[in-house]
Amino acid sequence: MRRLMLLRHAKSSWSEPGASDHERPLNRRGEEAAPRIGAYLARHKLIPDHVLCSTAKRARETWALVAAEAATAPPPAFTDRLYDASSRALIEVFRHADPDAKSVLVVAHNPGLQEVATALIASGDLEDRERLREKLPTGGLVVIDFAIEDWSKLHTRSGRLERFVVPRMLEAATD
Image 1 (spheres, rainbow, N blue to C red):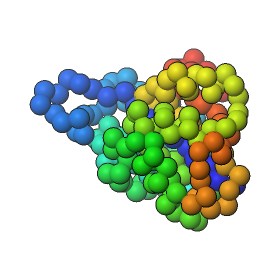
Image 2 (cartoon, rainbow, N blue to C red; image 1 turned 180 degrees about the vertical axis):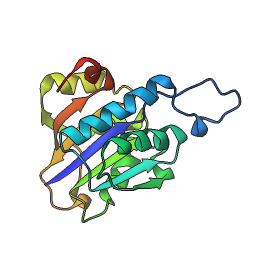
Image 3 (cartoon, rainbow, N blue to C red; image 1 turned 90 degrees about the horizontal axis):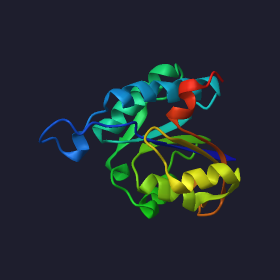
Image 4 (tube, rainbow, N blue to C red; image 1 turned 90 degrees about the vertical axis):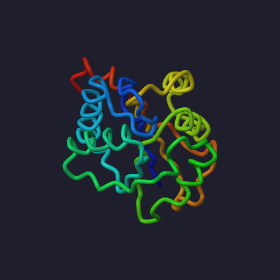
């Protein structure tokens, strides 16, 4: 069994004139949302064995804030391959994940992250699947389980959506 957790970076800022897309930081809303996702991961014992993170500043900042809430979070492996990646490119990255890792968390970007999530999922809560198909908002977390023993065997329509959580859901929740 393998578990893939896809985390879209938290809300970023467009306020720095001349900053490249790659160097856009989180805005205040993103800085508040990311720790909520981290606390959720810790509370629900969803700490990954391995983390792959885009090199974009907003993704790095998201992971730092998430990890600060989860004391046992592993250090991330930063890779440019996640920045502006297509669904197909993301699947290749996932297939080459650490073979010893049973659970991998990926911090990356849309539209690729939403596209790959919907392409990988074959079953799970229908309402959550429809919400995901409509939108993967910033800070959104998608947890997909696969009945495989090796990441290289990962393929489309082979996963079960275990949960889909967005920061807004956690604002009022006490769970």
